[in-house]
Length: 152
Image 1: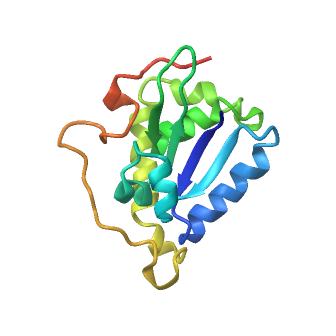
Image 2 (image 1 turned 90 degrees about the horizontal axis):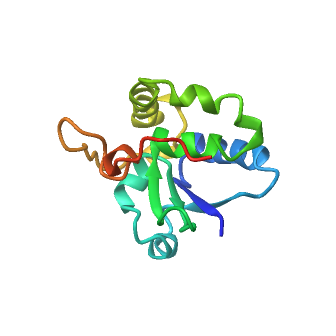
């Protein structure tokens, strides 16, 4: 079973990012779904609807080594980078100490301001602001679940 990338289908920047991922995913390792579709959200019960419109989410299925989990933002990108051969050279750099904190800040900065870049029609990308609990990562992130070691 493939991991599913959930994205905001009304956001031009999000759609462009998914188009790029599709081009890099020549082995078909990922599935892609619009998080604005209620059927998609029902099929991915671990994904919060509001958060899925704020950050890219990745629903990773069970394996014999790890249970099903949902990653988001930088942590989702880092997981993807380890699976797509075109991004393998980047992947080790995403595990350098501090990379997750910096990557999350950059990701959230761009994602939170995406409508300022003219990427959304009639502010379609705007979603209610949801802040993570103070002093910690967002609830859906890998670091919130204590996942810190890379997976081969």
